[in-house]
Image (cartoon, rainbow, N blue to C red; front, side, top):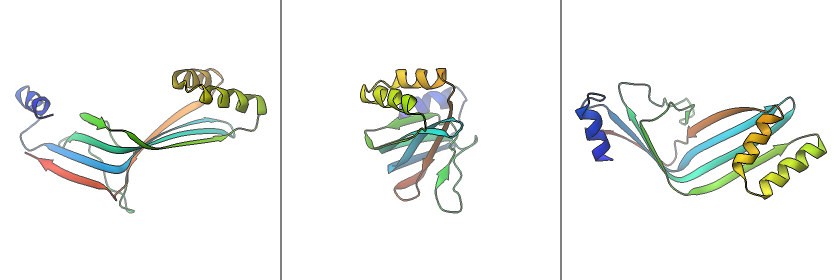
Length: 141
């Protein structure tokens, strides 16, 4: 990581005091929710460890009133370790559609699930967040 930061410094993308790093221990979650009318499918991943690096002069995660960080901007660099916990929530009224989605989930084919849901009219929304418990924020340089 230090090499990558030095590369950014050498190319003028960053200043020497502009790196903010969020180290998250069981506190970084990514969620994709697919919506189609009343139908909803949610896939969530809570990572055992992740490290997100930001340029302090650009948009950085802002802590909300409850202490957590929501709707994170794109980091310069992200390292995510093993998935600690997965969340799958399926709320579909149509039995055939629910059976097809369940079948694709059982096959563990994420790309096929994504393509299928987009084809039948689901709209994806993405959210990522950092829970305040388990995060360490460090300013580097």
